[in-house]
Length: 391
Image (cartoon, rainbow, N blue to C red; front, side, top):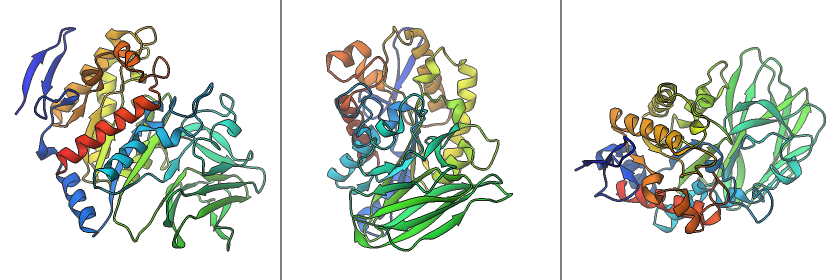
């Protein structure tokens, strides 16, 4: 059952989930595939997948170790990681191993030595693995046009499989990969037919394994990778956060490895896709008609493979950074789409009230980004909501 309330500022809300603050238009009937995922994983008969494209707050900006950039070890504190951990502690075993793109931060802004190689403690991108100029899945991709520098990723949990995401294109080169320094296998990326390619790599017996990727010739490309233990039924939580991205960045569809077709591929086998986009579209802002049209494209892409879809606002931001009127207009546009598409929506404005309240609760790192505590609160809330509606 739901009810409508007027909240002022011309905004109408519709409560769901028994009037729980932060839940808008929720119904158990909206989660059939998520419910089936829970049943399957608990029975040990298969895996699940939750996909989370998003901006820097999905990626975890501001949630890392203390310091000027707070990106160091931010992977461990991003709310999608906390989501996976909370699902696990709630009885639904989940896995967050993986990295896609560079988070959308250009090398000129944050040097590779203090960003991409330290975002996740098990990742080491040698200096020759720079970033491409164009935004792709999870931010700009990695590329190496010069030497045999190694891009390595070491799992934090026992895994027996990796999946490498790269592209084929006329201007591509050749890369090589090995597990734990073993035999090399080459992947030729030069191809007149462009593609977003996924390659499954057996890692041997379950354990802590390292995937090493090396450029052989030409310009080698790497979009991302993930790792898992095929002997354990789990939910794979995939974080595609792209810093500073607006919804329009995700609907680019010029080549086969553009953000929209790449995201569609990754979501094709998803059980749940969470779309957390409002913050950057409130700067300066995006016209609400354009925002709605582009978010509708993302909704359609997320649903194309049959996944459940959940919308989610970003956290409230300082009104000195983003005017309240702009934030509320984009928030309302998302509410409109939640209703017209019959989708559940997590409303972090309803949960926290405003930026001042979040600061008072020590949940913010700066004017737009949560801190470690803020990300933990968001991730735990999203996980508890999924557990409730997937029951």
